[in-house]
Image (cartoon, rainbow, N blue to C red):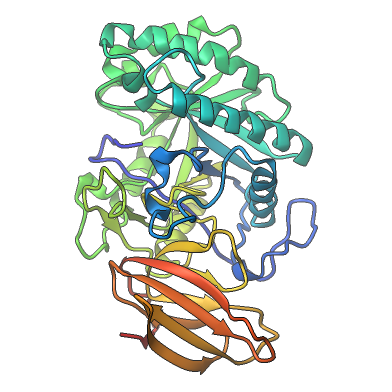
Length: 424
């Protein structure tokens, strides 16, 4: 996804508050590496979700080590079940899946078919696990499928007619008693679409959700039932130090949605941990610092202050643009978690392990060379050099084999009130 009414596109993800995690049924969650990361809010928390993992076209973030090009296959039932259970344990009630339509004889059929199969598996498991799922139709699929803008609207109508099979799922997220259909607009596609005609083409009424309101185009906005906020630097002005995290953009968004002109419209608050597209093929060198969990927490506080009923966290698992929260909001490396072996992080990284092991030998390697070897307790911040790939090894007392993890470093992203251990 790549666009915004405030500037170049952005993506991002989520969360952190109290003590031990538990799911919505009260069942304790087995997520020791995420202790404290739990959404305790009255709003329904959703997370934007990607189903392209396993495709060659989206292996860039995990391509440094042979055999570890992809963290998992999005079509794998075990992966889907794990994601749902871990999300529920963190207080997330549903995924908004980035969807590109079905296989339809188009130029991007390989990606479309793969992601649609993964989406079907997500709905299947969500029905069993009492979890909500909604579609976010990505307009990027339209221009990839059709070269003639005159065909764009027909493609959207065809794709969304197919999507009605998902609307019928017991897991489908309903807002105002109708299936909630989100879409992600592209400036090269959206001007060629008549959303009123698209809506009327569907056989079931939907709650149609656009990205960002536009008070200067009231007739256009009248076509939609609500709006969601998305990871965006205010006025598209990205700061090299990453300190622009969208405060003024979000203040504008909530102000507009509170206005009389938008009375009755659904407001979906926006929360993200940060953003970094430095490893993406389309990189524009955009960076929004996580600052530990400060960016995420300030956005969450804004959403709660504005009493929204829904929050969309961007994202659960977009590693290419650095908005992923699947492995934590903080730049955390849990040594005992093996999936994936390679993590994409910023520095400093927080290295943790089983808290029953009070002290272990922590080693850091780069290009096979040992850079660091010291005893530490769990919860050590390490300062590493951006642009490099490191291997971390943890020698636990009594074990002949170390726990190991590869970490690819994106950027410097200081954590407030933390002085990390300098490694190199």
